[in-house]
Length: 390
Image 1: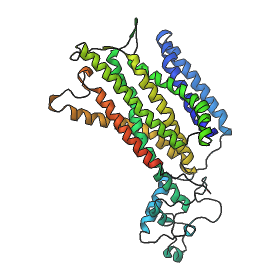
Image 2: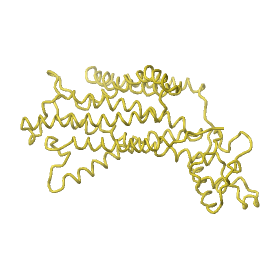
Image 3: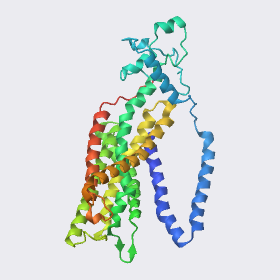
Image 4: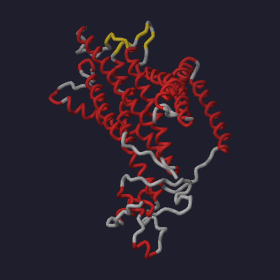
């Protein structure tokens, strides 16, 4: 329970910093000078570094266990080298160190699972192994723990892959949401709102949802599920994927309304902002923020909790890698959509003048992809086997 709350409040603190920097520091830079605007975060970075070094002696370091990529390659190679070797029915006959210590430094032993049976060949002690008496060549013989380490990554891979689609949805805040906002009414009296600044509502949404989830939703759901964390981590991520679909539906609905007003005022052929308030975008930003709390934090918790001790750093890096792949996926989808919809001299869904296009179709496409992605997630998550340590 404490571990789940840690990730919640860790993400909360990141967004507090983002909100302060995007509002307070920007105002200071514009009104009091850039020197002060850069000086304040410099001072706080100095305090953060000091705090880091003060806490270092209290930190429990993980013993380095060597390269996880090398260990995974060893399992694959050993499995193929024993392609014709039969796997014993009794899993206790598979190779493992006899005492409680693990062959991987700093890692606890992992219990055998029945998934990816082919990889178990790497742990089979063959006649050749017996004759040679060499049980210490990991390119020929691996421990059950080493094999299960790779199995864990294989099991988590589909869950990880489904997060890429959400990252593509998340990237809309800095791309298509901004383009949409530029073609809407950004005025409040004499003040003009920069369309990109509405991303602050995503940050506000995260700051609101983290305490709601941690202090209200979890205790409430715990009464019904009996689970200490309320939802399981996989259930949490599934809820986030559903909310991400709603965010695209909200964005498409706003664009439909914007285009209706453009047609009613005969502004389709003019590249001008439509008199529809930009604040109609707030719900889609809030929904993305809510989905972020369920998916991104849940993903951090899943990869930390389910990854074997010696590859937690690698798994945490994989969790962050979804953001990069999500941006690439968004660019790929945008390129395909542009190429297909502009054939025959048509303006396409996303022309330079959005009043002539159909940005709503693009949001509907992302909503459909997100729905299919959620179905895949449900399929894999319901079949996911949690790791077991011994």
